[in-house]
Amino acid sequence: MKKLLFSLLLSLSAVMAQAALTFTGPLSGQAVLVQPESSSGLNQVWVLPQFDGVEAVYEATSDRTVTVYRYSNLGGGYAEPVAVSKNGRRYSLVLTGTTDMGYIFEEGNTRSYYWLTNYSAHPLSLIALGISPEADCARTALIPSGEGDRMVYYSINGRQVEIDRQLSISYNTLSYNESNKSYGLTQVEENLAYLSSTIYVDAPLCDTYFVLSGDRFLRAWGNEQSISSSYFNTNAIDAQTWAIETEREYDNEKREETGGQAMGGSGPVEITFGAAVTDAVIFKEWQMSHDPEFNDITYRYNDTDFTYTFDDTGTTYVRFAASNAAGDCNYYSDTYEVFVGESRLDCPNAFSPGTSEGVNDEWKVSYKSIVDFECHIFNRWGVKIIDLNHPSQGWDGKYNGKVVPPGVYFYVIKATGADGKKYNLGGDINVIRYKQNPVGTTDPLD
Image 1 (cartoon, rainbow, N blue to C red):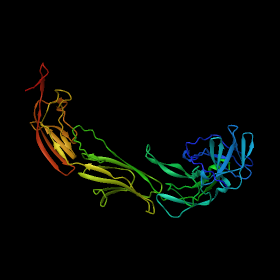
Image 2 (cartoon, helix red, strand yellow):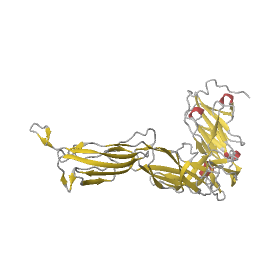
Image 3 (cartoon, rainbow, N blue to C red):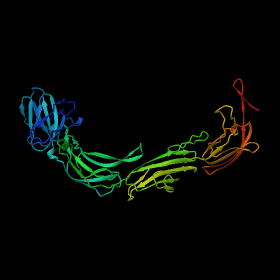
Image 4 (cartoon, rainbow, N blue to C red):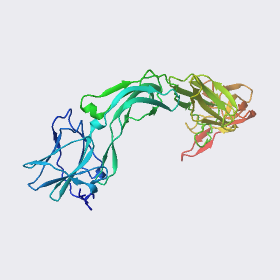
């Protein structure tokens, strides 16, 4: 039979009519329109329940004669003319056999391209849905029995394109909610283009059934099939963790840049750690180490939440570990780094209480990483003025509610740094009083 060679027929620049095909005859369901890829050159792709006894009807847009060609997977370059019946501008093509085919309707210089798929040649039959006994922490393998092969169409240049049957596999799992820091039940629905011998899905994080249903064509015809697996006990696990450092706003504490993502700086550092875990988690613990590889774990805490105070100089590495009952699925969180710098303690020797509010009117040490502190301040006769038990505290220059007279006072400090350094300090505190000059300058009062 004479073959039709369209040298430029297959070019996307060819003018295409937008006329839609209609179908008459003993259809068991409506023809389903599938949107073709724009690069395929096709106007429409149709899936029909069956071919036998069905007529495809093309309505011409003019009185010009319409010639119809048929092509297979070889593409439009190998199209062959087929017989049609004509009634006015209506051209009817009787569909026979079961083989999917492409059709070209040529109306003058205008051509329209269609692909027709016979669903009866690709029936879906869902019989049972098994679960592979092989445990996998990341994926679960489902073994369906039945049929539902790949459905395809061919572009005008013979390129194969898959028709998505839109089968659905659905099951329950757990998803993490950041706002309330917990896992909640959610349903997963995944699309399958066709029925393969093995279906792989993300391992559910809770016990569940798997339900396979489809396809889009049976759904459109009111005949959707559905099968369910046996009850599945999950072994997959997941967790989410967080760490919140207790903030301190002491104006006399010297902060130290930790760099990177490390927390802390000046000790002691108090951090609350927390974790949320999924159903199959049995073993769980927080681990601490001075080794970033955790070859030497110095502390373990067997719960999801705890608060810890870091008061030793150096970097401590913290992570959360979890596993299921069998120990074959394990989880390790990202590593948190907590840094505590070396200690420092400096004492001022003068201040001016009661003179200019907010300016040098309180005596405070300057410090970093001091974990234990006591300070006693005396006047020249040995009378204790005040006791301070935290390095952030200061003396406002008052005794019994009144600002003390100017002069020399004395402090004694005993403190310990996060690095173990001991501080035994003593020295003078000069209380200075200033008088305000008319021009705005100040002179010390005698």
